Image (cartoon, rainbow, N blue to C red; front, side, top):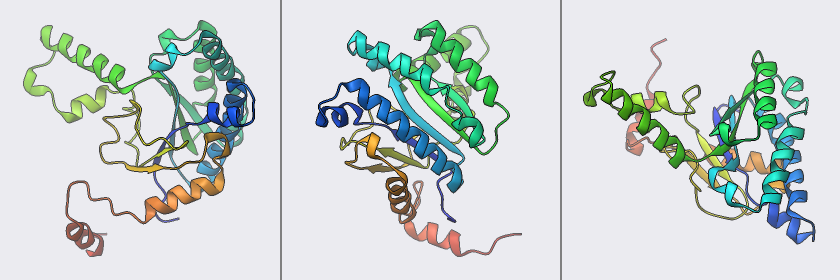
Length: 245
C-alpha cells in the first residue's frame, strides 16, 4: 500500500472478442465492459489511486460500422447515469475531440463534470474521441499560431510548454499503463504522457478484468524500479539517503 500508482491509465481492450466467444453481438461486450469500469473505479478509489484514465473511444473508432458507433454513444449516455461517481466521491473529467460527439452526449458529459466537480477521492478521466496524434497536432498548430502572432518566440517552446497545452495538463503523467485483451501495443494513447510510465499487458478481456486483475497489475508495478533515465545505483542511493525533514 506504500507504492500505489498515483495515476493509472487503461486501454480497455477485448469487449468485442469477449462477446464473440459467447456468440453475442459486440454491443453486449461493450455493456459488460461498463460493469468492469464500475468495478475498477470503485477498487481504485479504495486503494487510494488519485487518477484513473480510461481509453473509451479513439478518433480512429469513428471508422467502425455506424451501428456500433451509435451503440457506443448510447452506452456513454446510459453509463453516465451511474451514481458510482457520487457513491465513491469520484470527480469526472473528459479528454478528446468532444466537438465530434453528438450534442446529447456533449451535454451529458458537461452535466456529469459539473455534478461531480466537488468530489475529491479520485478523478476518473474518460478519453473519448481521443488520440495522441490528434492531440499533438492540435497543440503544434496552436503554438505555431502563437509564434506567428508574436505571443511566443521559438526559444520559448520546451517540454513544459507542450505539457501545459495538452488535454491532460490538469493531472500528472501516468505511473502505470495497463492494456487488457492480449494485444501488445499502445494504439495512439497518451504517447507524450507515458514516456516513463510502466507498461503492463495481460490477456484478460476487459469485461473479465476485476479487482484481482488490478491487484496483479499493481503488484507487478511495485516490483519494478523506475529510473527516469538514471542508473539503478543512483535510484538506490537516493532511496537510502535520509530525508531533510
